[in-house]
Length: 111
Image (cartoon, helix red, strand yellow):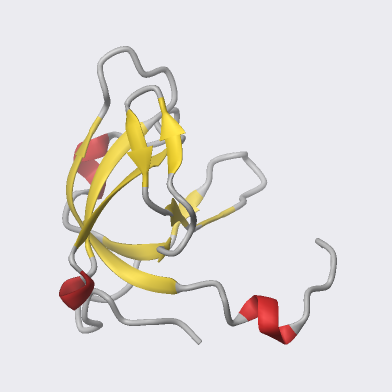
């Protein structure tokens, strides 16, 4: 486990449901997939994730997944990433992308 944080730090993290509207491998990328993610009333964000080894972009388009949306932008060679995809570690090393049912609206917050 990681170090304990206080409640004030925990509530700073903005975790939301996002619907992947587009996904592609940037030309020259060895690890990253570029996502366009719809967060409902919050709009769309461009987010890069290093899961190319395990997922094809087309299998993720249309899925509702879990994202951190208030990270400071991170520069990549292919553009700025405006968040981070949540995935679960598995024993085989493949990150499991958590899917959220379509009955949940994009932009819904986790608590």
